[in-house]
Image (cartoon, rainbow, N blue to C red; front, side, top):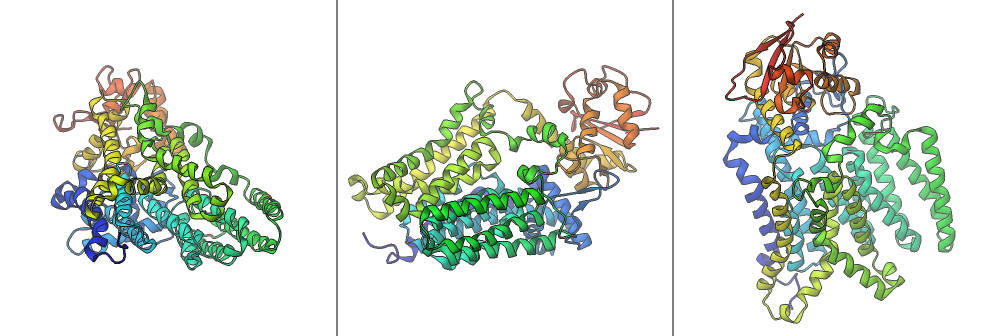
Length: 602
């Protein structure tokens, strides 16, 4: 078989061209041919709030001001979001602003930048595989498995939350760590910069960072002569990158935060860097000496962190109000276990969805464990990069099973883990007789069938009776459209509007009004008051909260106001008469049948 590098250029580029063609057809082309539907596509509250944040940045130019001033009155809400994703949105906004007004340019950037991040990821993965000398069939398998994957919603048009940027950083870190463990120490500085950037985007990035650094540390313990200098450069570059991030993001460098990049994580990486510098002194000792010394240093680091920052052990939930921990986060959909995502598809047996979802990866796990069984300890020593892939696949898969938002991290390592299975398939007697082109087609089908089946599986949810979640989504859409098109004409003089927390971003983006709270953990008291108001069973309970916050209007969505027995539902459905201080404002019932608007009087 001719080598990959000696193949024609068109043959070498075919996996990239094919995957980019799918990205254009599936994600970019549909939104470019119908720009009039951009506002309908932009429905995710986090994405809309991102545009609110960027719009404020455009108007003020203050990169250090993270306060959203028109929520949580009178102080506003300081978001834990950081600027890298804002910069991505601005990158798309600037050229679009030349031909569109401010809001349309922001929405246009939201439409095009997430798919472009996906394109960047695909190109970087392909380029890395080319550098590894992977055959075309392997490249096709990896890229098609990613491009057709229905779980990568963070790259859909309009998804300008930071999860797409996080996943892109995770992919780059994964590939750089793989190269590092192959002995390519020249990537050390870049690995440190990417790791620092990922933590800058969100402390959630410590999950893939833990896998990466744990693998580097483990194989340093086994072969210190191969990794010492390079690993030191990784740690130093990460620490310096975090120093830059905190200097940009935080007005006061030394104020600790756990849910965003702050001095807490600068200190942690500094201690790890100093600890590894000390650990390098055991270079000539045996493995057990190095292991014991490393354990002692790790205990000291943890002790120092807990002494300086007592809530460090809570990770990103450190410093949160108890209400947020007990009554808010457990009900956020992206925090739920993976099995909950399949309850609407297979209501009697949601675990069936879990099994089907993981069939694509099981063969890879089995082949890897079989190779370890056959080779023993020598496999662990001689195949450090492949062991890292297995560790990354297992850790991210288990975490994804526990928290659905993390499941996307598992796909790239799991697909790489399946490559030996593919290699055995291609080298079978039957496949070996096929031409390169036909073999490539077979591989594309092998990669496409599991993910297309997964997409079909997830799509089956539409055939089941609507669930409470679907009712909530309907309310989100109905209220968002009402706020955008009808609220200001109906109430031109309003100031503070009470509406469901999911509606806060749309209210801030489409109107000049103030919202009480959104679904964000840094406004616990306002969030609790808002929840208590809509859940109140009597007018007396609701009146206390109205007098406390003195809103000008209340928006009610009937499906969200259920169940019966709530005061606001009984008023909205006419089962009881509204008090004189609540004046019903007529809305277009045919266009907004689920929406009720009330003006609040004295």
